[in-house]
Length: 88
Image 1: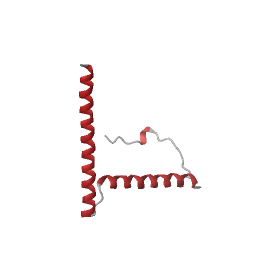
Image 2 (image 1 turned 120 degrees about the vertical axis):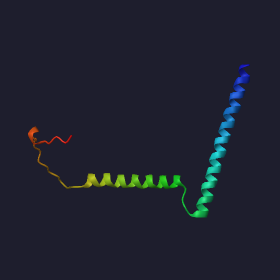
Image 3 (image 1 turned 60 degrees about the vertical axis):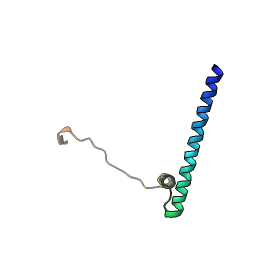
Image 4 (image 1 turned 45 degrees about the vertical axis):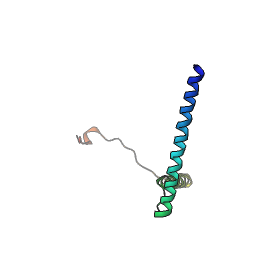
């Protein structure tokens, strides 16, 4: 009985895996055909390219900040509580 239950679970898991792979393939084909017909990139490609651009800009910004020789000086002073307005 135990081996029969394992066999059923294995069959169900295999069926789910095949269905997920089949749906992914159909979605990929649909996105590719839409890209060829309309010229619009698939949404996932747009998201990944935007993420890559964001990473490059962040890396350039971080690198530029380390090489900068600008010195920013600011005066620090305490503000008495009487000068702070209550904006509630």
